Length: 386
Ligand SMILES: *Cc1c(COP(=O)(O)O)cnc(C)c1O
Image (tube, rainbow, N blue to C red):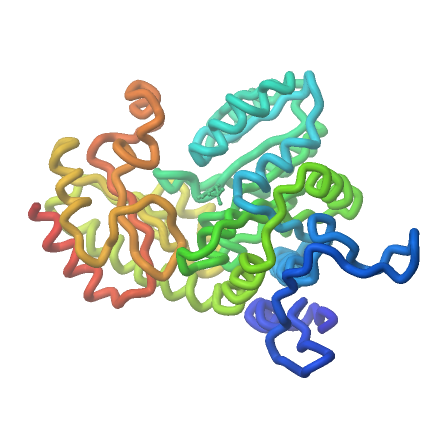
């Protein structure tokens, strides 16, 4: 269906790019598994020729996501890391990339152990402190990369303000918007040039696919990134594209419902004597609350972190004592997950770096799923006595 810009997010999530099959009338487009496509003539290229370069099932997912993010085009990858890696390919030797301090651990590793090998300079600065962040920009800075909310402290970066700073210094802004999802934040509308998603998380939403995506505002940048995607080949497979498209259809409902439960849990935890502090952008005392209220569309996400009163071992026991919250990294799915950043998602940081980032031993990160609030609360309540 051609996009109707007047249609709301939920409507576009179901209809844009998801045409019925013209041959059979099937309401769900078929999954195209073909690796190659017959050409009209030697040297004539049809719409599709080879599945790395383009695939109808992938094109459908990319069209829907591009519409939801307000971009000119989307590119789907085999994983979120493949998508982020592709974004860094616009840099050349001698260029500098400045990233926010609260970035995903895999992105930290990619920048410091892979991207730097191509002669690209990497540095990190706190993107929540605009003056300090701007001061870290160099004449050679070509790409700025931030995440909001950040992991695991749920730090909020003012994307519109960082976009203005980036452009004033001649750099592009990329935003890893995995935690917010396109439902709650649309970075391209705020001035960012590239938005990245780990589709493994909210977009897939059911813990059953690995994928990533980039969406961009500018056609020339889209074409450049497409060139790198096709040249390096880490594309999303057709089965994952089908699952990701299916995930988008219920994304708005899932994210809003999960966010509602997360807010209720945050408010309950905040009053509990066994808890030191709760980090959730929806709470008025969170340092990023007022920016989040402006930047996030009607809800504050379904990720929350809290600190128990107790040491490393006590925190570990709490994480192991839940029944509904399952002990696992990853996030964004219908199943609620629990993890201890110090021993799991951020274990690769050395203890001094963890302390510098405010990642204490007592922190617990929740990915709130779609289960009933009362059941999740009861589960945490019993686990906190462990
Ligand atoms: C999971 C995640 C990634 C990496 O995505 P993969 O699909 O695991 O490669 C990047 N950024 C954030 C914020 C994530 O949560």
